Each structure stands twice: as structure tokens, then as C-alpha cells.
Image 1 (cartoon, rainbow, N blue to C red):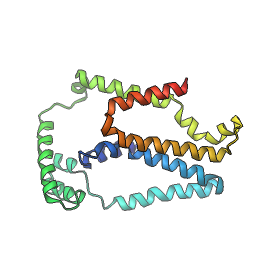
Image 2 (cartoon, one colour):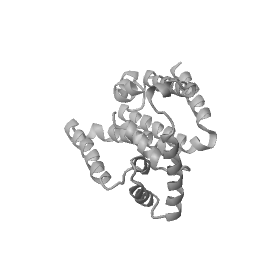
Image 3 (tube, rainbow, N blue to C red):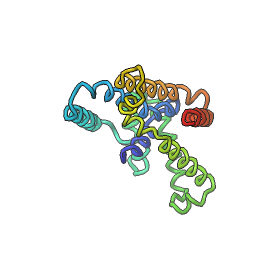
Image 4 (cartoon, rainbow, N blue to C red):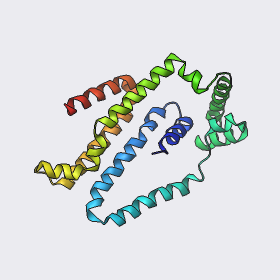
Amino acid sequence: MFWCSPCFLFVGEIAEDSIRGALGTIRATLGNLAFIIMYAVGPLISIKDMATICVFTPIVFAFGYYWVPESPLYLMKNGRSQEAMESLLWLRGGDVQAAELEMMKLIAVVKKSESVNTSMKSLLSSRGTRRALVICIVLGASMQLSGMYPILNYAVSIFELTGGSVEPNTATVILGTVQIIGSLSSSFLLDIVGRRLLIITTQVIMSICLG
């Protein structure tokens, strides 16, 4: 999962302010869509064929991504302002006014970052940074310790052992659909109810379900 951090960082740097929150959740939505495809198609084809399909998808992505420009913020930090402007024009569909406005923001961000000490020691010495780090660790640990991935990976076996009336493969597709609904709902609610309330609500619901 080493690609996750660059992915989130790149999306955050190229997204418009109005949709940055929603785009931040798109990876989870696409991941859940992949689970549904695996659950629906998996029982119908061999493991080798499924592996071939899974390998083909990132190859197509890598080929298409070759033409995507570099992050404007990265280019500005490396003194490549002309390339940053061209990247913004490409990302904003040729809207010169929007690109120039964001270029001014980038210049201010780069100047501010140059005047701030960003060493690990200075970051950890900040009380706000330490709090943010603790929050991220707790949220990440709660997700991992919830048992989400074992349930998703062994969903068919779990449903077989429960002996329910719904066929196991059908039940896993329903499970994936619920995941999709949840991630899409968070995308819409993120900028409406706010991050904090959404996190607290989902954590409480998760605790109740685990209890």
C-alpha cells in the first residue's frame, strides 16, 4: 500500500478547494467497487483469470497516467513556475482566470513554507502537530482493529459458517454494496456536516456494531 500516501498527496494538491474533501474519499469508494467486482466475478472464473484482470487494470492506469502533468505545488517548490502554470491550465480545463488565481495561492504557500522550519524535530515540537499525529494514529488503529479486512477477505467463508438463508456469494455482494453506499454517503456529507461530526458518528456506529 506504499502508493496510498503519494495518491492522497497528489489529489490534495491538484484538487479545487470546493471538491477536495469529496475527492479525498474517492479511493475508498473505488476500493469498495473493486470488492464488489471480486465478489461478483470471482465465483465465475478461475483464480488465474482473476489475477490477470487485476494485473491489467494498473497497467492501463500507468499508461494513461503518463500524460497527467506533475503537481503544480511540486513544480513551484522546485522553481519551475512556467511548468506549474501549464499544469494548472491543463487541470482546470484551460480556464486562465482560475489557473492564475491558484497560481497566486501557490506562490504564497511556497513563500510561507520557505520561511518555516519543516524538520522532523521542529514538527514534533509543535503541540498541534503532536495532537494531529495522535488523532491519525488512533483513527488508523481503530480501523485496523475493527477487523474490517479479515471480514472482507473471508466474507464468503463467514457467511457459509453462519448458515443464513441468503446464498454466501450473494451476501458478499450485498456487503460490498453497503460499503459503496457508506463511502458515497461520506463523500456527500463530508462538506455538509463536517469532518469531526462524521468521524464521531461513524466511530460510535462501529463500536455499537462490534459490541
